[in-house]
Amino acid sequence: MTELRRIRADYDDRTIVMYRAHAPGAPGHPAEPFAGHRTIWIEPSFRWLMHRTNWARRTGQERVLAVRITREGWERALAEAVPATDDQAAPADAAAHVRWDPERSAAGAALGHHSIQVGVGRPLLNAFVDEWTVSVTDLTPRVHRISGLIRAGLNAQAVRLLPTERPYPLEPSLARQLGVGVPHRIPGPRRRGGQGRPAASGTPYRRNP
Image (cartoon, rainbow, N blue to C red; front, side):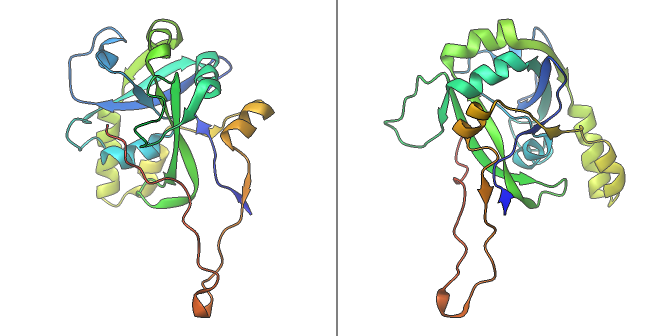
């Protein structure tokens, strides 16, 4: 048995780091990269975002930001979030949305647990920008350096440059709401006759950047 859903992050007593990628632009006020969005998608997993953006090489995702926000704001978003869905009848005005996708290794391989992505919706956008955000750091040069090491086969050096992420503590009620810490049985080898076939887990990733 293993935990299918985990939240690992770079955090301290008061703040937590979220990652976001977007098109290149001049640095400015912390609100600038988020202007004009109805939903801001953020994630605490650096490696997952690197998989999503192909190490900042995907068009429109060439700039990677580390957005340090308050833990109070982060946990408020989690508490008010609803599961993300492609259903057109779903509540588009939700305060936040949550999606889970397979966590990734530095090389991009899917791991045996899922990491979280949170879409901060319109009701919380002002709080995200004006109250929760502590700092915004452009990590693009660091991303390019790590990617170059991986392409050169210097994986050990690359891994040493990755942000340190550790399990994030949640109140038991919030953990239950999100399904964090729930044991999940890893499917065994497929039996003859079609029995014992592993069931698909998680929701296919379909959201636009």
